[in-house]
Image (cartoon, rainbow, N blue to C red; front, side):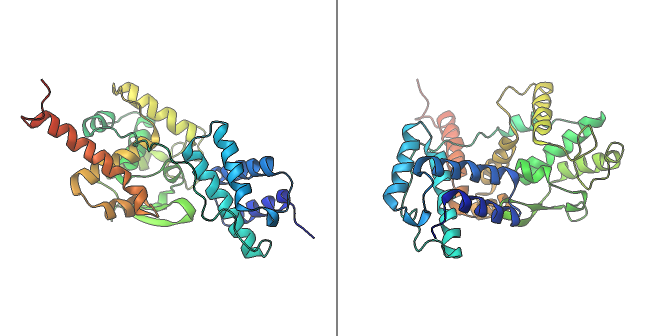
Length: 294
């Protein structure tokens, strides 16, 4: 008996949940599968061909979805069919060989070294300022994603070894160095953390004593930027972008940056080489006598 798309989608999402995918990732998969259901109807997935998937993508593109979003959607559909094939529900994956429309690749929003120094200018003294200083020093020092920072427990940081153990995308674990400024900020925060923390192992806690949330993290960063007079647009991921850009500018070691960022593919890290070239081009324009505009 043919299996319907909706029931198989639910089974796929439950399988991802069992593999401890994050709530945000599960929500994104659910949205992408809902698009597929809307566009092809309550069909048997085994009856769909590549032209059906291509038509569905074209419809989403006509609605104004950006190439980056379409690439993510196609990836979700491809993973869904890969699951169906493993479970024996389909014989072939109609998403294989399809590519979303190309779009302009935007450079990550990275702050300059001077802007980062201004943002993290210390010392912090007030209770929540100590927490914020530790959070954002660590985020910049080790190139952490927002969810990675929020998910840290006290035991994940080894101050003696100057390392932090991070659980990244796909539940992959990596160990990242922690710089001296971040270590100093953590040493200032940890003795004070217990004043507000409830029964939680979370390294960074919010006003109610539980693990800090994404909104509180963003608001704390906004307040820090305003307090220190940083006019550039600052968001949590910009600290990770700044880490990658600055380390690459100093070392030129793309592979090392890839490992520290936890990128599965080197091509993802290579976008920072464009940032690095942009920096070099600006230096050239300012310094070379034949490059200066009259």
